[in-house]
Length: 185
View 1 (cartoon, rainbow, N blue to C red):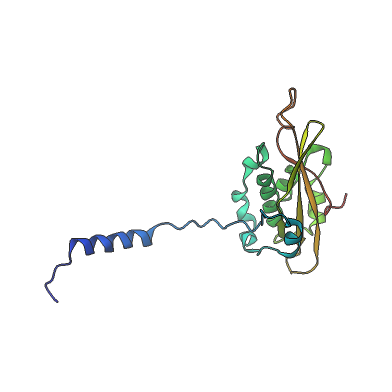
View 2: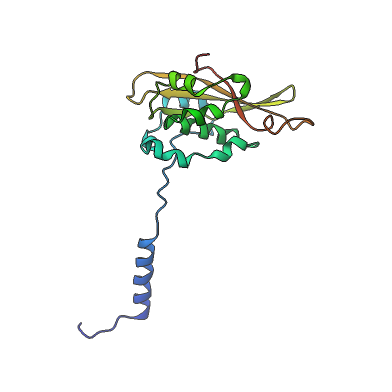
């Protein structure tokens, strides 16, 4: 075999494989929020908690928060992903920004509510949209578990935004959390 020259097609295949193996893999962890598309979302969300892998980055994951979600007008689930990721990394200031001003939610209230530590397991089910008096609402089932897999809490979270009505401010037109049955008031 010494002295044999490889065929051009073999060389091309080896080069292609080498280039493919050197491709940069996407290091971004997939969020562990679960968004269901089936009808029995509340029961499924209550029974399934995602892994805490997404929170292992700790405070370094703050750069991964989708800050554009705070300006979201179409997809309420985008704001929910922002909020749950902020809770997972214990960024209480970011999490509080997802709430409406009327809710008077503060970083300190959230820190006290969630124990002040990162690593919460959160599952959010597929929600339902409704309208009333110039507003659009989105309500989704949510389950929050402790990092040590201890006690979990189940409830719902309600987001609201103004319907596209004349005179609505920019802040009124974006999704914000209005209330949650799992947060003590």
